[in-house]
Image (tube, rainbow, N blue to C red; front, side, top):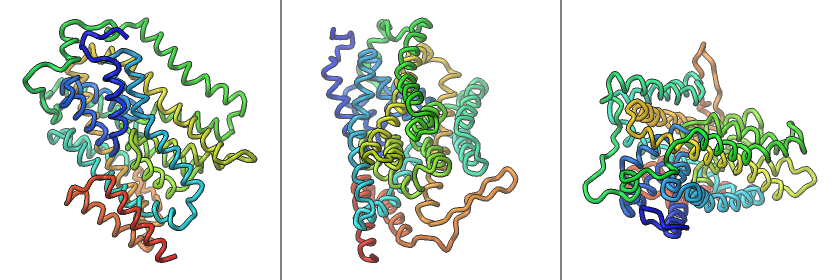
Length: 453
């Protein structure tokens, strides 16, 4: 490949993307922090302003924003092949790890020791999600207006059941209009670029905009056609061969829908996926969904890989006379395909236009407002998890338009409460890292299960 104008070779980029993929633990907040440290601070490949501009666009998209951010920067550096390399290497380590952990879960989950490990993971995951609320909140909520947007998003979701897309798109509209009326109220806490030499990509784009970063309607249509074919042809083949009522077809169709309508990143997606997978399709139980999230937290890469776990359990349950493990692997592969192929579509068709609109005040205000609303979305997920981790029974009651989740106090799990409090103390008071907290809680859960039989 010809060396690009910014001087960063494709081989060097491959090594960097592989490193980021292996280091990206901790959910979206941790992954974005890793990318910021490597790309902005260490390598100086991209400036703070351009990094945050790309991040805000990715927060607007359905799907995992961290993976899409990697794809965006990879595309800026080395065109489509760079975006593919960055996105795939970001996902691959976690996908392989999640597949292996799903195999272990299905095969040995009923062994008391293994069951105890998963019992202990759930309270630790609650602390991780709460930490994500605070991390993203500190970055996104720069004033009272943005904090109010986050609170309104939480209330709309938790108490009124407003769909995620409406919450996020409504926040974007408020930001777009509000940015024209009071632009100072729609500026987050994003740091401004410092002094020194300009970042590599910024220097290149300031000097001459490369061809692939110039928006074109014809190119947009060509790219959309290619990625829509890659996305939908396998599903149409599956539909023709197995029918619409088949579990594998339903997995492909449902998670294709999720790839379009679930905004706000992985934490925002999970509440919607959990509700549909558990209550509508009955692919798994609430406790299993939390187990899957715990597994996803222990692997690098996008947290949305928990959907691969859902596909594995659904496929293994629908195996019939076939091998449950092979059927589970097929279900996981289908879900992974329809989850991540659309991510490349959104970036490759939208990134040139977003680059062209980088200085647009209304767009920047809208994206800032959406980032603020996502804090409320994640808080909604944290409370949902807390109720299901700590209580055995949670009833939903409707009072007019209100939807209230009411736990049955008699089903409070004292061991889960102790583990959750310990994980929160270790995380927030002593600054313990995520993986040690998960490991200690899992070991404590296993010890508890073995002790009580």
